[in-house]
Image (cartoon, rainbow, N blue to C red; front, side):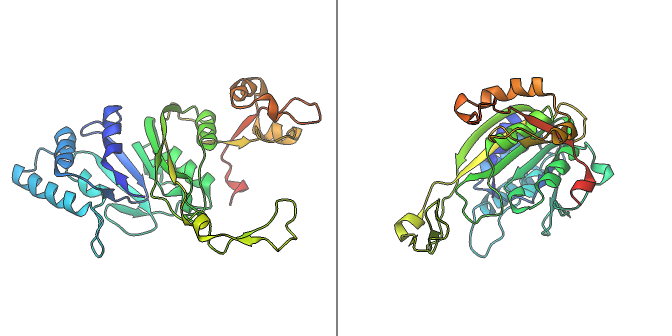
Amino acid sequence: MGFHYGYLKHLHELGCLKNGESRILDIGSQNILDLRVEDVLEFAGWYGRTDLSKEHLTKESERIAYFSVVRPGERTTYLSELLDLTTLFYTSFDVCPALKTEIFDLNVDDLPASYSEYFDVVLNFGTTEHLLNQLHAFRVMHEALKVGGVICHNLPSFGYVNHGYVNYNPLMLRDIAKANSYEIMDFWYCQGSGGPALEPEADLRPPGAPYDKNGFKVSQALAEHIAYYNLNFLARKTTSASFRMSLELRTSHSQVDSGVEEKYKVDLATVRGIDSEARDDASAPQSGKAPISWMGSIPFIRRFYK
């Protein structure tokens, strides 16, 4: 996903960036799209370097704005090129070489000690959906972020058939925020570009009869398009505690095993208070037992996931 100037402006208005101080980590080197010259000059006016001449700034603003429009056969402007005009520190982690990019595999690589709680802003704009190891990636982002720093997610939520491995929902990000005492600063959806709802040759069968292969193929009209939406989530890190991961059982109809409960060190009284807002009576099991209302969290333990 490309990065739009409006996100930088939003971070500016929220006070998340400081001239000469802020350090930005980009999870996946992003292009910045559809800039206007006046956008570049505005941002440079807020955070610009004093060593740049007016002539150089004008020339660079025109170049950066021109190449921010996607054109076949031309390289699109990187976010780092805009930030090069400022006093803000920027680096990105990616498996693909790019400007201001450190080769880093978010599936397996551990954060260097020199980057522990180093960054004021972590940007995750459509990168982690391409990873299988979600737990490791979210742990790396948490460890990289300073106390008081802000993480900014812009992720595929629904639609995006066959784009990456994962679509995200608010429940996941809110539970991560609760488990790690993040302060949720903003949360919204924005519409994506759209795409096919299903593959034209999709095999549809009755839900109760997977053995029945006499289903129907999807019509072109059905397969053509659905709305695609991205989930945007901004949260501030408030403590230096190790990363903690939640276990989602609020939509389950079973009681958690006592051994698992102990492993996750659940404060059920507290958690039930949190989760009661997210459930209704219709989710209670038919057995008559009260529905479990539970959000366990545990520090990331390497031996479980190697």
